[in-house]
Length: 490
Image (cartoon, rainbow, N blue to C red; front, side, top):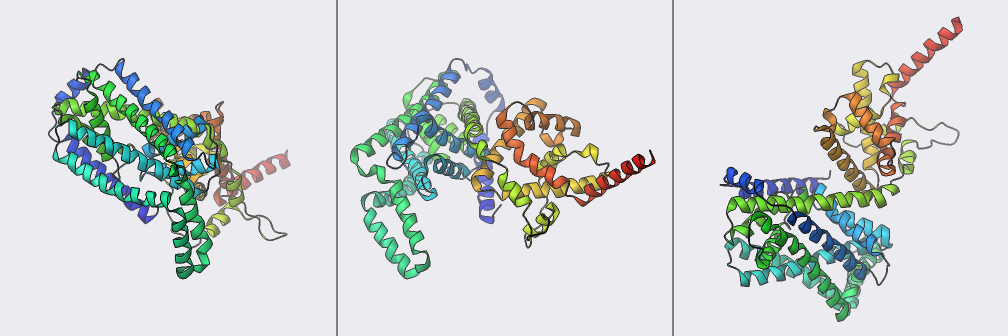
């Protein structure tokens, strides 16, 4: 992980911990438990989830419009792109879902990565402006508190600067291109074409908003998105015995979503609970009930969209994760007339000058489950060393893949680990080896194509690397010699 990314993760963890502590401060746990136990979730929770998921269908329709000048997406494809971004944000830190969403949009539409990132940014900006308008409306209709005004001011400042930049690109595209060309010619002539191309892709990313009618249609779709999400908050109010007030639902929805603009851990744990609870408390809801409501609202927001996103990745994403690149990198041909180098040699040469790091505990457990350990008769110490060596190689090869495939692999493995916890009530690394091997075999060699595809890269690379380990090759050669001697005596 790069230092900058690591810093964002640390900042997110600290932010989440601080907000979670604030949300839980001075809470009466008994009242929270009583509110959760007394919640009447049927039929309100299913209706809330349906409202939330329907909003993503509208998001897909809006994305189709934004890229319609240069690409043609079906509604299911556009919705899938949107859902993937939310799902990845729920399981990976630092809002990596935005990058995953842009990569998927690039793959499905043929747009450049810069233009895909611009469209993704534009969607987020339009969402932010709509939320800010709805939040301002609720502040006029309901009593205000200090945190509401502060949230509105901070969000308004950030979104205002971003809006000015987008309007500049929408209204004066020729000026921006000319300015970029002149600046690049003077400051960096060698990259002039690349700079102008990037600015051109950015300008094209916001081009759909140049016609007032199209801009109005996109704005109305964005308003519908957030009204549907407010419906989720509205349907959950009576589940906790609260009056189903549209204004309270709008306040909770807008305040929560503006609050989670801050960096946090995956799924916005902490900020979501704090801002949602504070919105309800400001309307007179008891703190215990408000926290319970925020807890259930977070589950309604987190679980369905994450499951949907994983399903979309299995259906559209992991099928592109072929192992050809891994094979080419693990067995690079030597000079003409020589045999290909061993995996161990490729591992050392490919990482010359790189910092040595131990593979993750999960990767070691996975490699141990994939390797044919029962055939090698290795002593325990040599077997552990071989597992570490193979795991380091497999992890390095996967990390060397394009960012899109790395994200897909990580998300798929997160789903596998989640399924392991649900089935066995413990983590994958805590399972005995025999049980781990049987569980991995059900995924890697089972009847579900998506599961087999998920494990194909790690499985093939691990097996290849396993038989290139010096200790394993020595054990195999020794056993072959023994068998040859037996046959010779016979």
